[in-house]
Picture 1 (tube, rainbow, N blue to C red):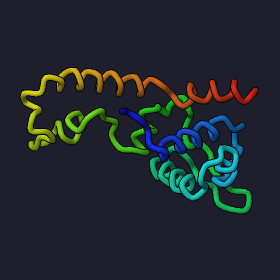
Picture 2: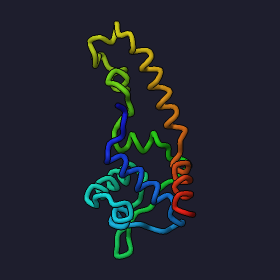
Picture 3: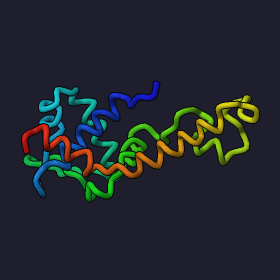
Picture 4: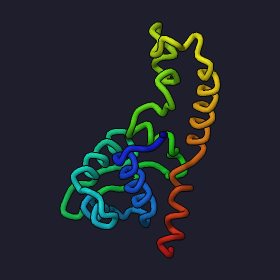
Length: 147
């Protein structure tokens, strides 16, 4: 089954929350964790990863916190998932690093009856995730929050 990890889910929750804040407003990891009832320690690690990838900025100090570092319209769902989980792939054989190397991740790859269809689905999934922006994810959240 194809699913995102909790870490990625928490990352998407945090990014959606931060992108929905008024301009120049900050939110602390503790505030976000309490608002969504997620473990603060895990959320802090997720926010550090997102900061290292350039998607959030951390502001230190008594009134510090986090904010989105880039325009939410320019951050794709694929960007965020890749930052949290690494390359998006349905199976090992569709991983970018395996396609460019001499070693095959699967001994059946040359004669696999589902390799081409899986690669096609992989391309479509990757293409689709690149078209969905953080801004698009935030809009439905605003509606449900009564904004």
